[in-house]
Every structure is written in C-alpha cells, then in structure tokens.
Image 1 (cartoon, rainbow, N blue to C red):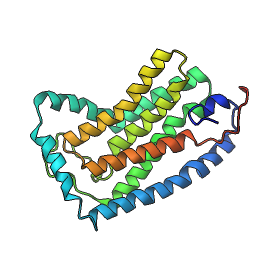
Image 2 (image 1 turned 180 degrees about the vertical axis):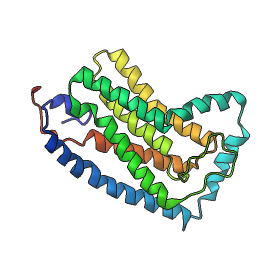
Image 3 (image 1 turned 180 degrees about the horizontal axis):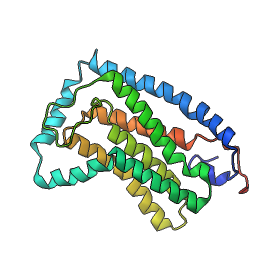
Image 4 (image 1 turned 90 degrees about the vertical axis):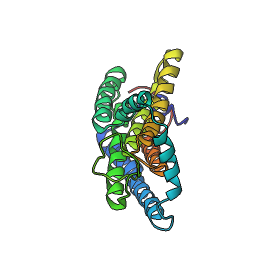
Length: 231
C-alpha cells in the first residue's frame, strides 16, 4: 500500500481501543528510541566534539549580515514556530479535517505528530543544556536549551503531516500549492531561528529530524491492512 495514500486506500473505521494500541506500539515505543538518539547526539556534540565551535561562523556571518528588512521578515517566520501558533493551527486544522472527511482517525494525525515531537523535545533539551549562540538574540530566549530546536521540530511535525493530508485535495492546482507551502514553512522557520541567533546549525538540523521522524510515525500510527470500502 502506498505510504501517502494509506488512509484513502483503506478507509475502514478503527475501534478506539485498537487505535490506542497501535499508537502505543507504532509511535510511543519508537519515540523512546528517537529520544535516546537525540540525547546521544547532543551529548556527543557537547562532549567529544567540543560543542562544534566551527558552527559559530554560521551564526556570526548571519548576524553580521542583518538588515532591518530581514529582521522584520524573519520575525514573522520565527513566530510561525511559536508554541501557541503551532497549537492554534493544529486545533483549527484537526477540526477542519474532521469536518471535511468525517474520519477522526485521520484528523488526529497532526495532533499526534506535534504532541510526540514536543515530548521528545522537552525531555531531550532538559538533559542536554546546550548554550545558545554567542551572538545577539533577536527573540526572547525560552527556558529550554538551544539543542534541539523546538520551533523547527514543531513546525516540521505539523506542516509535514498537513502536506501528507493535502494529497486528498481533489483540485490538482490547490493540492500542489498547499503541499508546497506546507513543505516550505519549516525551512523558513529554520532559517529565521539561525538568522535571529537562537540556535546553532546542528540544533536546527536535529530539530528538523525530530519533527520529520514524528511526522512519519504519526502518519503511520494506525495499522492499515489494504484496500477497503468506507465503513
């Protein structure tokens, strides 16, 4: 069964109990391994790799090239990844998808993605404690450490799952536009966080990998057996 069309090829309604069981086995258990990998990379960066000081050149180059116009543009891009924006967009989209498809098991996919991403991020950043780049910070620094990027992880988890759901849009032009917008947004957030001095390059890369992995896990959370008619 093609990965992107798994919820179209099999539209059978799952029981809530089986969906929860699949969620535990297919998402929560792999998320523990994901957390171990992210923490391991963080400890490697702060330990044997000496903090990857070569990354400082990227932050200083971006800081030296700041302009008032790009400060304003990246402020908007950065805020797209704010917790309240991500949660707000997720709630609206879950409600909209549920209303349009009448399939709650599909509508909850973005919520699963950002919830798992946030859990992995919070637990990982709590035990790594990496300092933020040594440049002027254009955004308020949250209490979490620099590694990994929560903004990038959250926006990736949310918008990549929305891009997958967008493949159900019948109008081909609208489908392509929505897909491209959803795929581009996390990269805008990533650039903004680097430009605004809030993260090292490796923080952004690992944040993206966290969000991408959680998006894939969320999309595959429910066991789909094959082509079935709508229940």
